[in-house]
Length: 226
Image (cartoon, rainbow, N blue to C red; front, side, top):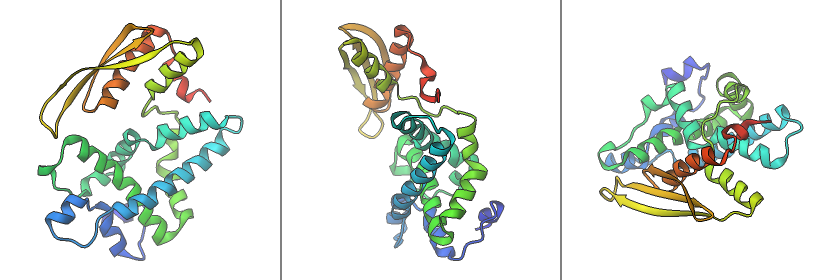
């Protein structure tokens, strides 16, 4: 637990923090009685609450919809992955890599940020979690870092505003069951506007939508225009 001291965290219950980094695959492989999933569930709620409060106070004139988009950017998997590496939490992840895809490992790296915050909340309360976020995470909000733009939502908003039909089409699906690659096309009023590639249909659709945004002249940075 030396890494906790680095962040001025001195746990009351060290057993609580042992579960923070244990993925269920590692739990099964090593016959352990615990994993991080319950802590992740709790930490997710704590993170959303405190990020929401910070955004609410920082952007006093922003409407609910914009605040929701802003929060999504700072609590999405891309952001959590970045936090995990930035804080060095990813080095402590215990996982059975042999039986998991790269996407599942990335997701686990994101999960442990939330499980860590869940453990910190239980051990030392919400003020300590807020202090930690204020010191290490909220600066990314202040700097308006874009971790994830929901390109599909932006294209949908464009379609709604211009009465345009937005459609996605699966072009190809390849690879083994646990490591597939998808290719998706996006059409706006039956006109092809982009092709995206990803490890899931959603990821490929996002990439296709990103290309469509460029052709449609939509501002990519609208997400953080508060």
